[in-house]
Image (cartoon, helix red, strand yellow):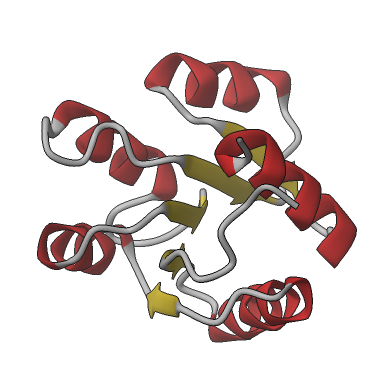
Length: 127
């Protein structure tokens, strides 16, 4: 694997069970440095405090959605190069298109497993 397993990752989801699932999948793959945020506003604040090598964010959250978070990240000159993977239960084409236009690096539809997550991370962060 060409991905640095020590890279810091931020998982953003307002559903604590999903955060735990993604955290466990990341641990299975070998990632140790995983932070979490329960919404886009908190995630943005954390990203301004610390440089993350990857953000994995849910789409549907309140008060700031993952899509809005993505837009904020891409609009911020210091954060806009951060790799961003969107996770959602929605596989609607228009959502995928909107996320791509907003600058998402990859997209995962729930449910997914460690293999899928690893493949997406390798596509986004692999050398």
